[in-house]
Image 1 (tube, rainbow, N blue to C red):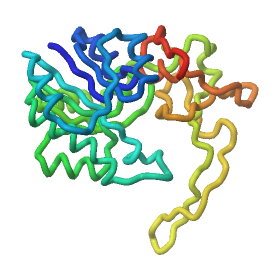
Image 2 (image 1 turned 90 degrees about the vertical axis):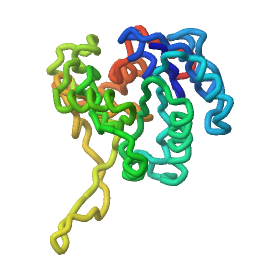
Image 3 (image 1 turned 60 degrees about the vertical axis):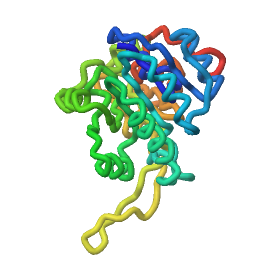
Length: 268
């Protein structure tokens, strides 16, 4: 099975594919700095190219693969709940639609797509009768809680569904050996404010935000950590009741399932 990884980033999907024995023949990433990180870890098969334009040329190139798994992770910033400033479902769906149209034209042996579980994405997949599952990364050997929607070939989605809720198999204590003893430290998310909710007329509504206390909401190293996102969380010392430091880029990487020797180059 040969794999093509579109919107490849620094190679999250590629890492999993190669660990499972597949050969990644081509990866495409639009940002040259990010592609450089990909190349340092996975090889020269990455190409810098902006996706989302004419499908014909890329489809013709992909038809040359006899046995192909096609994967795409269209950018989710416009659809993510973490984006508080420029969420736009219509704009966020543009590259999702482009990728689904590419899949329909290429007709690969198998395919998959990763996205945030936004209602607009679910509605689109239901309309097109495309199988999908909403799964948590912690059920698949990743030491963080990260909910994602995976669409794709029916047998792939069925296999993911079968693993849902199976529970964590890798924990932060397994990938952060420098934080010992493991029962001393907590990992906190980068979230700084907590919604203040009240009940009015039987409905809970948000009336404001309050500043979270140091260590509040932290998870011990025997529990999958919070979702890792653009702002790094912190290491909290429960014995001395203080924040020790922020998580390093390398620590954020291994908490997302990357190998310990991942190379982040000059831009993390």
